[in-house]
Length: 41
Image (cartoon, rainbow, N blue to C red; front, side):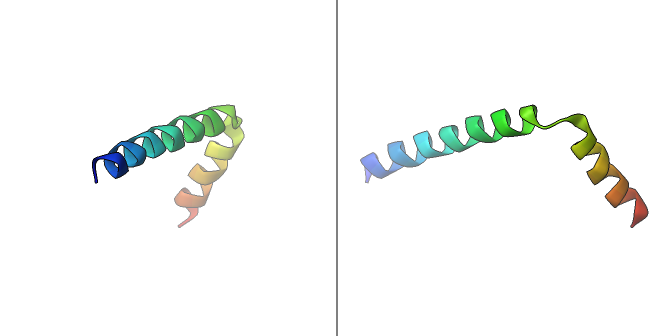
């Protein structure tokens, strides 16, 4: 049970770091595109 909690913690940290690396690697035009999509609605 305790091992599952530690595994879940590390998995969450890993996903967070990977997602930050991916989103930081994206150019700002993608964020701008999402902004225009929201503004048109």
